[in-house]
Length: 321
Length: 271
Image 1: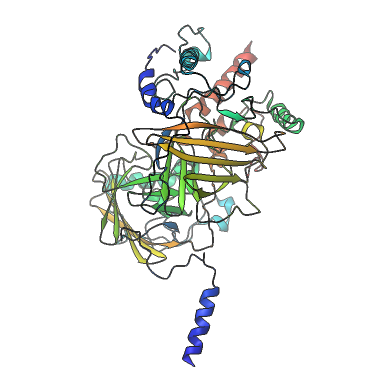
Image 2: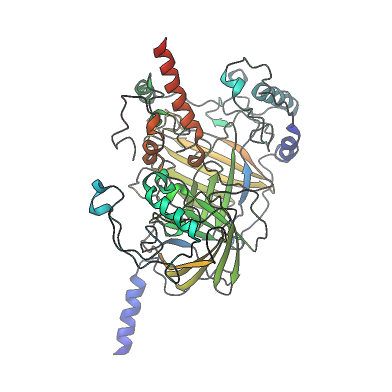
């Protein structure tokens, strides 16, 4: 973590529009040639708002611009300014998330006066897991304990190139590469995360089938409600377990153009097996001046080989002692 | 009498589900170009071998008849791929090592043109500006820049595609391929120097003629062409389901790094 490129500038300038244009701003009437609202483009998911609110803020939803400036500076410093890492730790040898334009202090980050992405419940915090969900989580952890490095199937879905929390619905920004592309054609909207699978969402009026085959990203149908694109998703793979959710999770996403450079992304999650109440949030997607390029995860997954071979070496060394 | 028949026919037509996807005339986009949108797939054995081939043993004898290689007349115009002599030897070497080396077995993206005739569906979406293709296998994606002039900024598995309309034919120039993909399960290949010219021509509402010309003077003595029809999948409300092939390739790729004494999941960890 030796890079100190404090290049907030690009992100802040690009994000300024989002901060100045509050979410209630008049949406521009951009239309596709076939008459749907035009939400296509490449977007950054990075925003200065944290997922959950600092509990000390209570139900305070918005910062003042002055409070926000101080908060955003502190947040980016904390996350990416780790110059004095301890030798021999992962932080010391891992490449900096602040390099390569991957992260929120290098790329496009929207300024966001919200104190949290989560807006429901009112305290801006994800509701606690139900007892059943906590039991599922603990059982999964117990099944892995002591076997974390046995074989590829014991590693996380992300390390295995199967699914990312930044690309499956609901979409939430994560540490790096939090970009997505929206493509529209008559009858379809495609949402594709940079590191994830395209969700090819029909908008031809079809409903979600009652019986759904489990899919890692669920199955989605979309519709237009005025200027807003509404997506309903259900039928998740039980091992997707997004934030310990069950396969019965249902996600509603609402995407609305706010201005030329900004979409508002709103989501609501319902899964009584996991959370006693629905929860959701909102954050801006900020236009990127560029394209999303191919992300070949499996094809270049040296990490998996290195993790497993490292574990084998460690075992041999332990046995020799 | 004929009027009665006509009325009956009309009534029958009216009763047909409105969303039935069997089309009767060539669909066109609002700009007048053919609309290639839809889910397509080949029906041939090109994924086994582009060249004419008789049936053959499976790559592992234990796999038995259901994994034997089915015969096929080939899709190469002229029948044989014009390899340079040393390149043909390399093809033969790859054939011998196909069980280990074929990137398909590792769940790697198929590249162009192989992704087109792998035995999986792919979906084309089209608007006035661009065409995108989503392949089921390895979730490969191609964005085709219509009238685009840019070159690939770096090589990739699916390459860089610039498209243009030549009458009713959609022509795609593909470059920037990384040369790590194969052309089929028989070891046929091109290098990273290859430039591919694809031609998608509607033969009717539910068929496209697909052609790909492969130009790579480091491997072939002249450019050569494959040709095959693509068939529209007409099942109602058909969706290209996820085919996450990563779990099925893990033991093949990483099995030698597994902790001694542990076993891979017994085919039941997922799906």
